[in-house]
Image (cartoon, rainbow, N blue to C red; front, side):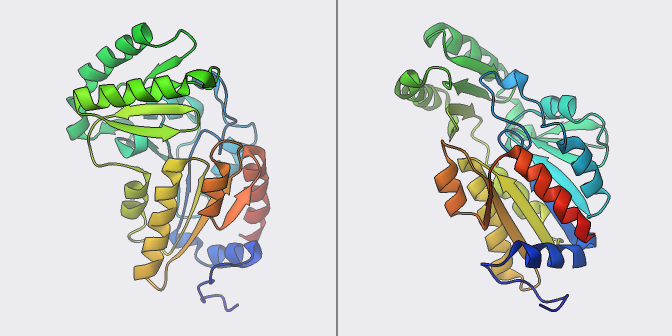
Amino acid sequence: MAESERPTHPLTTDDAWAFTASRASSTTFFFDFDGVLSLVTDDPDASQPVPSVPGVLERLAGSVNRVAIVSARPVSFLRSRFETLDNVDLFGLYGLEVWHDGEIVTNPAALEFVPAMAELAEAARSALPAEILVEYKRLSVALHYRTAPEHAAAVERWAHEQAERLGLRTQRGRMVVELKPPVDQDKGMVITESVRDAGCAWYFGDDMSDIKAFDALRAREAVDPGFFGMAVAVANPETGAEVSSAADLTLESPHAVAAFLTEGLKRF
């Protein structure tokens, strides 16, 4: 393959890395956090990036144009896990929050829902079984039933009832349902906006919301013959089959993601 020739899907990882290295100055790498850079835990607050991740992201940020984390987590959480990384952009709450110039910038359309989300979190703690972990994120509320999957149907039913009552939206994920403001914002929209001037982009995801990011890469390829997108899934027993079927490549774990990037960086 000539250095400037865009790879054609399906392709080998060698070809993908070779093209990426040739376009490093116009390449962005995007990563989800949970299940991609961190192992999924029963307690979301206990999640940490696997030990080798911060170092490899720092090296990657020094080799390509941009590295970004696009997560359902708040930016404040992501900053607490990557506070030493100055050159990694952070998109929190599906892009409702962005870490920019040393501060958190919030989508103005979502701010009016902050009081409602606080009240919703309290209502969830009162109404749902004690085993359900209620995660309050300021602009959203996530209801985790990982430790009590027998309550999944009841949790999702309650979430949909509240969404209808309060005019919110729901987002399903790995053993979780989340209530969000009715603001048009998702990972796909983050990627669509972020790759407008990129020549190459990779996205690493493991959950249903990441498929929209994969689709955004495909859409960009469809309108720009010079753009190359690589969708990478991280395997898991819950949503892995659906996510992998939408991806170009599947890696087995967050540890494998770090190893894959370490090996790929040898190309630069």
